[in-house]
Image (cartoon, rainbow, N blue to C red; front, side, top):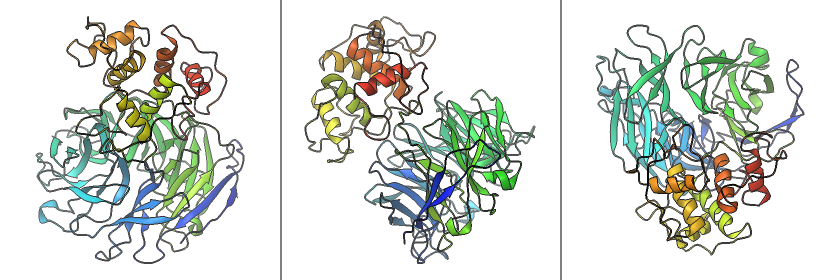
Length: 578
C-alpha cells in the first residue's frame, strides 16, 4: 500500500529560521503479515537508481513475526520484496545498513541464522549477498571459532574484501567467549579471523567498521582493557593490528551501536546515553558537536548523522520531540542546530536508521514503527531551494572514470558506440556500459582481471597516472624509467614510472611532503585538476570561480577547477552521470 502525506513544517523557534520544507510518507509497511515490516537500516541507492533496504520482520512465516526481508523502493514509491529470509539456512531478522560493493552486489548481515547453536550462546549470524535481480546467496555462516554475533556495518577497504566484527567468539582468551573478533571475508567466501580480542585489551566490538582516508579501519568496543575498563574507539590496520585511539569517559558514556562514519576526514558519531553527537580526529582528539539537553525541543537518542551535499549534517533521533516519537535535525560541524520535523505515530515513529540523500538532494529514511499499519514507513524530506552538487570528497569510481576520460579526450559532445557485453560485471545495456567498453576498445584499460571491469571500485592515484597518460599520449605510450622521485613510490612499484611522468609533466606535485600516496583513492575534486591539466597542459590555470555548486566553497583550493570542468560539460555534478 502506498500513501502520500504532505506536511508543511517550520524550524524550531530556538534555531535560525529556515524556509518551509516538506515531509511525505511514501510507503506504509506491513499491510499483510507476509509484507515487509519494521525496517531497520538505512536505505541504499543501487546502481539501477532504486533504493534497497532490509526489514526485521515480515516475509516467511517460519518465524513468529516473519523472518525479515530485503526490499526495493522504485522511483514511483512502490516497494517490492527482493528476498524473504526463511529462518533456517539463509538467516533471519536482518539488521543494519547494506553495503554496495565493488562487484556491483549488495552485502549485509543477519544477527540470527535460524538455529540456536549451543556453542554460540546466541544465534551465530550470517553474511549474505544479493544483486538487483534478486539472486541471493548466504556467503558465510558464523560459528564459535570464527566469531559469532556478527555486527551490522561491513566495509570494503580493499577490492574484493569485506571486513567486519563479531561481538563474541573468534578464538581469544575469554572463557565466556565474549571478547569478539575482526574478520575478513572475500567475495569467493573465504574467511579469516584477522584479530581475536583478549581480555587484556579493549574488546567486545560493536557496530562494525568504517574505512577512513588514512587507509585504516575504525570501530568501537563496549569494554575497555583490564586497566581502565572504559569504552573505546579502535583503529584496525589492514594487517589485522588493533590499537586503541580513544577512551570514553564522562564526555560520552559509550558509543552507540553503528555509531561512527567518516565525515571530512574525521569520525562523527553518537553516544549511547542519547545525549551527544561528537567528532573525533583520527589522532584521538574528541569534540562535542551538540548535546541533546532538551528531549522535547531537540529529540533524544540520535543515530549517527550523514553529511549532505551542502556540507551540513542531517540525522534523526529515535525518541523525544513533541510526540516522543523522534525527530529530524540539521547540524553544522561547529554545533549550529535546527530541528526540522517531529515524528508522530500516524506518519511514522522510531526512526532508528538515519537518512540517505538522493542525487536530487532530497532525504529518504525509514521508521521502525507507526504509519497506517503500525509496522513502519518510508518517508521523504524535501528541503527548499534544491541546488546543484558536485560531491568533491567522493571517490571517483571506475565506471565514472570512463566518462571523464573519454569526454576529456574527445570533447563533451562525444557519444560512444553501443555496448556489446564485453565485461562479465557490466550489465549491457546500463548507464555506463557504452563508456566502459569504449575505454577498453581504445586501449586505455583492459579491465580489472578475470573478464571483469570492477565498475564500482574506486580509482587509486597510481592507477589514475596510467589512465591519464594513456588518454593523453595514446594506448601504446610507455613512460621513461623510474628514477625515484617520491618517498612512498619505490621503483619496484608497478605504477612508479607512470607516477613520475605525471609529476614531470606538471600534472601533480604529489599528496604532500615528498609522497604521492599511490594507493589512496582519487577524489572528484582532485580529478578535476588532473583532467584539465591533461587537456590544457601542466601550466594551465582555470578562471576564477563563480559559485556554482552548493557543496563547493568559492573561493577554495579546488573550486576553479571543478567549475571549469562543469563549464566544459565534462561533468554535470553528482546528481547524474558524472
